[in-house]
Image (cartoon, rainbow, N blue to C red):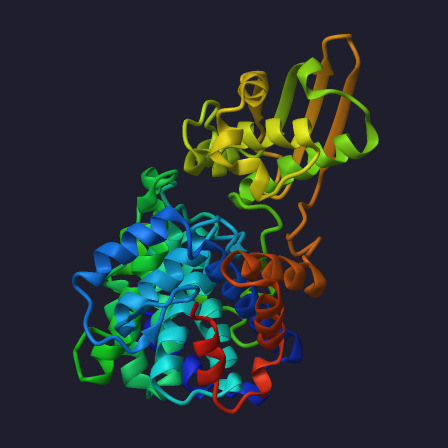
Length: 447
């Protein structure tokens, strides 16, 4: 039998920040900056306020900040909140191979730990790199062909808890045995079903993953036991969540090839499978002059996964519209933009948008990559326009620049803070690696 769980644990424990390639360190920083902005931007969303109201009734020791809030919670509940909020606007990062949003649970677990103990910026970013990297690699076990992971399983729920446990264990100075145990305890809590999409329970999934991962680390620190074969065992994680799992995909090229370098940072507040549709629509809008109300029909060709996850032609609420490619097709063509203003409750119920959504015809094409889409707009007067996206903005072939991420982070910060403070905090994110103790920075994220 292979020893995947222990091999990954050994890699995390022995990893040194100074040995990480510079581009990997910087990608870890980009992931963290993006995470902080997403958490601040989503903090005031109804899903977060309702969760905070509920959690406060059962909270323990109140020593950890909640980003964008005056409330303090215990470490586990704060991790849940700070991961939940980072997902609430569907702006969190994505690993295309597995469709996991890794830094939501990883970053949230680290924020809780960095409130409770002295953690340097280097330690924090190092732990974030390892948590993201290894949970994506474990995800590859489930998703690398010929392996198949059921479309109904949320990979963020299955894997985010493991990433959070690894990141927490690194900051807590775990040895190999402790890290192996933490991975196992986290894997034993893996859960999440995509049927919850477009409801508050969808965002609960990454929140719970952060809480479970941090809890796994706390238990491992105290000697709680778990088999060291939880990933690869005959009744373990891999065979439980995938058919024909590919265990080698977690360890091949470990330390040489980095999954974190393929993270995508969303330019639009929706699922990444919708991004190429938006880019194709923006391409048409930039080149052609037309009124969206004069469109006869819109033909959209996408990867089947886009249709499986986001085919909601008549969303009734904002949460459904966030994961509806017909909605984003309609709003982008009608308003020539794709941002938070295009996914308000008012926009969901706009009669012109509803009428255009109903004219969207979808075609699934196995040959179309997840990052690609083709859109054809047919006008009532007989004219037609076509737009194609080969690699959507945010994909590894067309990545978001540091400036893109900085602007996105600042604008989301302005949802939680005044403009001057938002700029200060956003700027501080980029220099966190040089900080000996990140506690003052973490405290600055509270309202």
